[in-house]
Length: 280
Ligand SMILES: Nc1nc2c(c(=O)[nH]1)N[C@@H](CN(C=O)c1ccc(C(=O)N[C@@H](CCC(=O)O)C(=O)O)cc1)CN2
Ligand SMILES: [Mg+2]
Image (cartoon, rainbow, N blue to C red):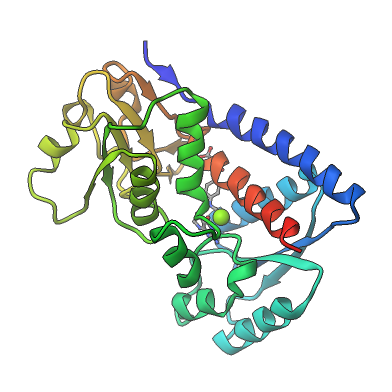
């Protein structure tokens, strides 16, 4: 039987640790707020934003909520970010992605002060990660490292195959796995012989956004499989990029969807917020 990597439990454990840390910071007079900006009302984004605000409340940091209409212009959004960059009590700023069409995501991410970029998306933080310097690390890949470590899964020397090369998951994931001394292969939609390469993975991390794309024929016996995908069907049932029922039969450990990687994204966001509070 494969080990079910329980992201819900591990994220709860991390949030409990952070809650204690925040209480200690408060005793030293250190407080702070996370500003959460959502433009438009994409239903999935609304769920994530709500969960982020709940997590703030749970660990004891203030959250400031900015729910902007779909028609918000880029200039209006940039002006809000500029204002929040200057507010001392605001230690973290996050703009929920994706943004409506017509707003340049890169320009928005660049506008956030790197010191408040708790998502770890600003080029300065991405660059710091690349060369092993301090900075905020993108929450989903950071959460995957925690899932592996807290499940006692060794990374060093393992062949990690990443399927997907996004700026938010695939690319930072590769750097983080390198930092843990894995041997890393990054694959994508143009990769030839994808199946053969995936079959060589000791740790297979799938973030391609294609529902149940990875079936048992892509997975080596005993591999560890991390599923970053989230797909919702017409009955609101969630599934991932991996055919869970098939793959769990032959792998040694696997993350479920829901309850695997997703909750870790929010736990690591909270971790970055606490780091932001400590910086003052
Ligand atoms: N500014 C950001 N935008 C986006 C990020 C991000 O890190 N920062 N990541 C994703 C969405 N995301 C966080 O924002 C996120 C996705 C999924 C989950 C999660 O807990 N999923 C649950 C299922 C919840 C549900 O939909 O019912 C699970 O997998 O168990 C949390 C956060 C894109 N945008
Ligand atoms: Mg995040």
